[in-house]
Image (cartoon, rainbow, N blue to C red; front, side):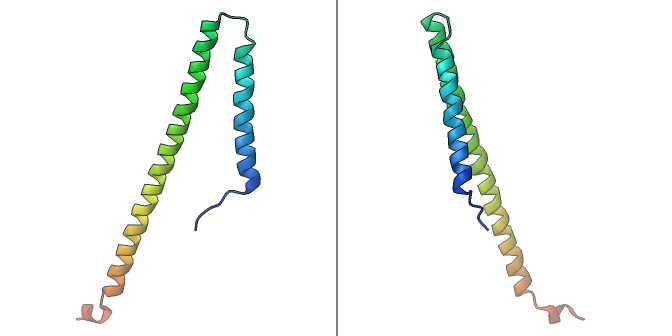
Length: 91
């Protein structure tokens, strides 16, 4: 069973992401500090965003790999059970 997100959820997730990044960028732009300090903060924000996406993707990939391994193991067990002759074990 594959879980699908509703279009409303996807919209809300992207809207909140875009809104939070936009407000943060505006805050950095209008902050009363030197331009090099603004650039430093901006780079920190960009590195935080890219590392967040990397961690999310890695977590998802590990979860999907674990699910695949579990499904393969379940298929092997079902095959063994299906091949087992119940009458041969009776002595």
